[in-house]
Image (tube, rainbow, N blue to C red):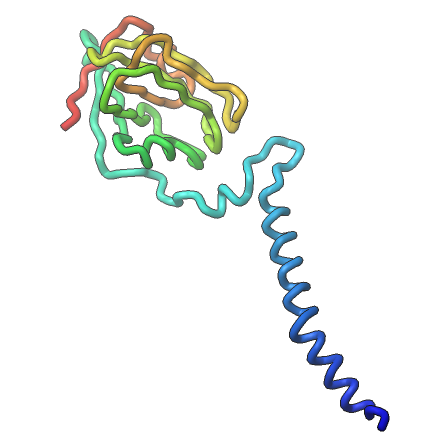
Length: 184
């Protein structure tokens, strides 16, 4: 006995709901995710990274004020990054930072360090300091969002200070100068 049209329509609807609809939804989700993850031609960061970014503009409430040894007129307010999570987040995803502010990366030991600018929208100055808080080397005016170039210390460093680009030049702070700060 031939199947009636109603039974064929029900089977078609069932086939659509059970098999085709989930496939269509899966294809849509995959294209959305891969589309968001693709970097555009003009060098913008991955949108997926932005979706999962830490929306707090400050990593922690821990801050210190640092001065240049012999010149107490130069003050720098620094957020403290002293955990692996804070080290990896750093100043990523920030679009502005107040003048005379920055971040200090505190490490447990003196070792060679290397930084990059992934997901960092601000041009920064970076200073690598040894365990005596002496500036080993400075990188000025880093390129925002650059994932190709890295910025290494030339000697073992215990601290790294990041500031707005131009801060070290504007304040006549050079390699060989000493910072003064207390970290508990």
